[in-house]
Image 1 (cartoon, rainbow, N blue to C red):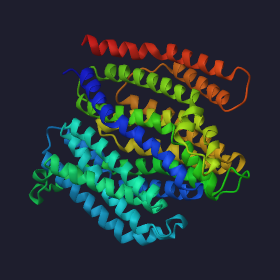
Image 2 (image 1 turned 180 degrees about the horizontal axis):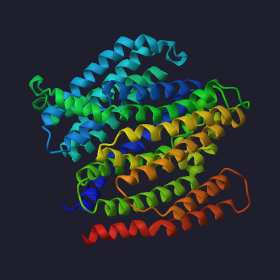
Image 3 (image 1 turned 30 degrees about the horizontal axis):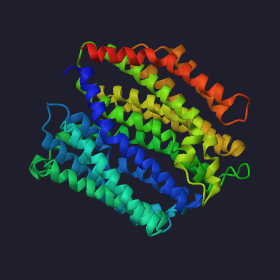
Image 4 (image 1 turned 180 degrees about the vertical axis):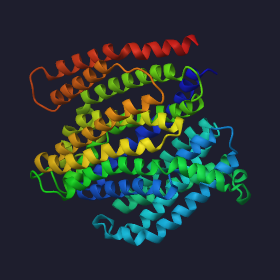
Length: 472
């Protein structure tokens, strides 16, 4: 199978396995907003982000190393898996030793040990699922995604809607779901035969750590970018009603619709990252990157535009305002966050260059730009504009990183980018975001015209790539 068809095939498999389950997760937003008040929802969001901060530390970002070395036929898969598990186990022990330090965070009160179990079970699932993907078992990987989401949904209903356990119920739901997923993959994929103390390879471990350690600060910096928004909104003074615990909870809900864009991106990136690694030594990889990037960005802009245009009905569908009506303002902050997520997705695309070429250190300093920009602007803009300031700071951070990455990454794998088209897309999306959040004449007509224009403006790259897949 040629590389275009392989990428398309894997993307379809991941889409089948992920899209329905991700949509199901979005409907959990309705469950959360009906049963958890904005202040507690803010605590839930901060705990979730803290886990995202700890997981790369505990695993030493082994998930990325498993994909990079597991797909490389020069390395024994048993050695890759055993070494990754051993390194992760060492990281978990270090986390437990230092866990009392987490208790100093005010939102961690009473949740420290549950969060530790959350991190360990999520790390177990991450290692197992990524190794399954590295073995090429993409259908099993996709099926596990459906199964894990279904169990997560069921546990959320039980612990939150039925037992009314709030934030504790959320943590228990994730723990149970991830633990069952890790066991399922261990059993069905026969991972036992790939795990043996004899397969532990110190030299390979050093190579995997050399690859993955530079990714740790990079991952942490992306997490800090999201974490700092909530912290500044929750604890910093600012406009009345636009800062504080409730405002932080509303901001977290405003991020749910932009996560739809992230869902599309994650589905594609799972397939693309495999193709980028496998095609790293091909002679026409630059043209391959160009075709895929053009189609990918066009799809993101069309999908993002559609979500901005229909942000009000989507918010009404996903957010329950019956118990806590203050959630009804979340849509006002969503359009800027949608554009911000698109920038994050494009940054992720360029990170595949660093992964394929093993130049992972560059992921760090380009992520540092995003984090520093975000924190500085949060300190200024949240004080002035509250939630809106955090949304703008998030976009600015991802945009600054994109400007650097698209230049830096193309030094290693060059492919041209239509910069004028890119910036025009951004401008139109911001204009549509302003239209949908303000009461202006002919609002719906302007929104529909803008969406039609964006589809026509971006369709050629998608159609061209689809024709190439068909012709090959």
